[in-house]
Each structure stands twice: as C-alpha cells, then as structure tokens.
Length: 230
Image (cartoon, rainbow, N blue to C red; front, side, top):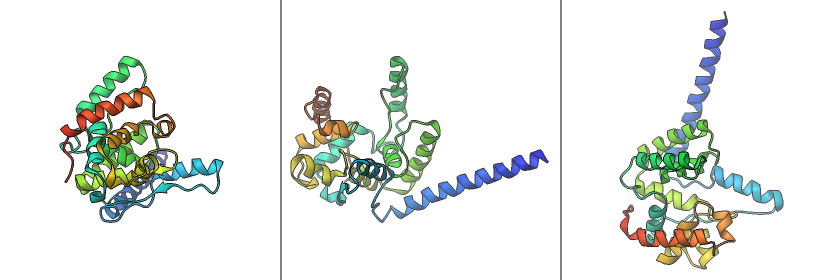
C-alpha cells in the first residue's frame, strides 16, 4: 500500500514537471515569431518600483534587430559571450573557468553564463542561484537554442535585458543614457552600455565607477574581434 502511494505521488510530481516544461516550450515556440511584451525580470522590476511608487511604469520599447546598432551587438557579445556564434547554448570552457575563480575566492564571483542562458533566466525565472533554478535554466536554454536562430536570440536578449531601474531593452537604454535611439549608438556608447549589464541599477547612478570604466575599455578593445549574427 505504501509503495502504491509513493508511486502515485511520484507520478503526480512527474506529470506536473512535464506540464511545466510544456508551458515553457509553448512560450519558446510562440516567441519564435511574436515578441514578448514582458518577462519574469520585468515583472519583478515593476513590482519593485511600485512598492515605492504605485503609479510607476517600466521604460521599454521593442525595436527590430536591424534597428539596433551593430556597435551595440558587437559590444554586448564581446562583454557577455564572445563564443556566442559558435556554441550551442553553453560555453563549457567559460563555465570551468568561472568555477575555478569561485573556488579560489571561496564565493561566487563569476558566472560563465552565455547570452542564451541569461535570456532563459530573464524570460522565465529569477536571479536566484538555487541549483533547481539553474537546472530549469539549462532546460530552457536547450529549447531556445534548438528552436531559435542566433539572430533571434540576440534580438530578444537586447530588447529585454535590464539597463537600470525600470529600464529594459536597448531602445530605452539608449534614450535614457545618450538621448539617441538604439540604431544611433556609437562604439563608445555601446561599450558603456555593455559594461553596465552585470549591475545596471548600480551603474545607472555610478557611471564614473572605476570598475565600470575599466570594463568599458576592455570591451571597446575586444568588440571588433567578435562575430555577431547578420
């Protein structure tokens, strides 16, 4: 009797897990052609803003891939995932390097996540480092890489990532920081925006931070060495 109950509950859990994966897959399929109007990170950001100002709204405007400066595409790939074109969702060498850094420091100081992994997290999950959350991120990453082109992955990524308090996507970021469009971003401006990605809410008000300027300079030097989708 006990084993029957265990098997019954196990079946229920597995059924719910399968249903969840199908829900994620359905959204990934839909977003192959249709643009996401919001993400898990956007919802969390709006909730955070509205705790202080109930009338607060996010700054976000979708722009097509061709309307985003090639400078920004290069800068972001150089900053976040230099092997973006070549890998299938995971940069195993980068993950190994990040793990070695973390073990050496005794805490998490590097992530090694690819653009595809970051996108999976932004669209559906939270910023938690919980192992179960990381496993789900990996599963969604596989779905995205299997179904979307690299161009689509980068297009969605550049349109949904956070670039400050309530600021999401390249168009909103370009207008907030440089009073221009995403299409009008120069190389220096693009390197700055790419440098802000790891901690955008802090850098929004600390744009002269030494670490930010150092990272910007490194990106500016490397951005011409990476390949990006046409």
